[in-house]
Amino acid sequence: MLTSTLTREELAARIDAFPRVDIAHTPTPLEEMTRLRERLQEEGHTAPPIYVKREDMTGLAFGGNKARHYEFEMPHVVDQGYDTLINIMDYHSNNARMTAAAANKAGLRYILILTNAAHRKVQGNLLIDKLLGAELHLLDQFQSADANQYAQDLKSQLEAEGAKVYWLQEHLFPRVVGMAGFIRCGLELLDQINELGLENVHIYGVAGRSLCGLMLTAKNLGLDWRFTGVTVNYDMPLNEYIFQHADDIKELLDLPITFAESDMRVLDQFVGEGYGIMTAEVVEAIKMSAQTDAIILDPNYTGTVMAALLNEIREANVTPNETIIFLHTGGLPALFTFANELAR
Ligand SMILES: Cc1ncc(COP(=O)(O)O)c(C=O)c1O
Image (cartoon, rainbow, N blue to C red):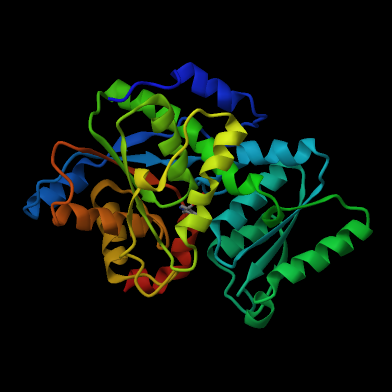
């Protein structure tokens, strides 16, 4: 084990220095998937113990990782006197839904610009967005190409009417604050790991900010946890999405150490045709998790991570002395938009 650079208390204090509202239901459970392991053993593989960190149970309008992000994001916005949020997201975005929920809790007006959204069936996240009362702008494909201009025009118009508008895509804070939320999750996970006496921890999750938050916990406390990040799309290069923000989060939280590309082993061969198009392996992963340990996964993110993990175990790329922790980041409403493919 490396020498600790911060104590647990010191790292917690860095996070606690930021205004936070209680939005997420935490601590989320860390649950063992014993039946999945048995199923893999029955297939003839030497499967290690598999645990799932249930970030799908954070409780905010169907749960997911963004509940932890918004615990910090909402006070940041409200304390600066903003009264209106603008967000541009894809039509089936989990983020869009959870922002709507958090905005309601914070009493903010929420303008949601959804790309490629015109004429879509109102189902999944889009349905929840509507129920939550998001002011929806459903762009067609043509308008979506110029979504930023659309948002800019809308922002100017709202400001002319007297609103104080926080357009999420215009700021750095929303791009990195999720990592802070997951440093907190990492501290929680550390307690659970210690309580259960787990060793050789290897965490699998979407290659994103949440996983980076856990990496930051591990790096700053000198823990020997290992990380595998699975990509779910082709159009979001990891450098742009996460790695370029390594120093931003370090500075924001005044951390001694940040993460590096080399801290995350990346698996990028499970995307298939592209984001939002389920592969046969993802369908199998969703059914297998449901039919063993009754863990429900989503078709875009966590299903892909599980497909990758199953492949890793079947290809003997994980050793039996490892303890796998699967980071379940939520995304469940999207399941219902794939009903036909999943029921087949
Ligand atoms: C279900 C789910 N998991 C993971 C992610 C990745 O998020 P992040 O980069 O914040 O970890 C997303 C992004 O929206 C998501 O919806």
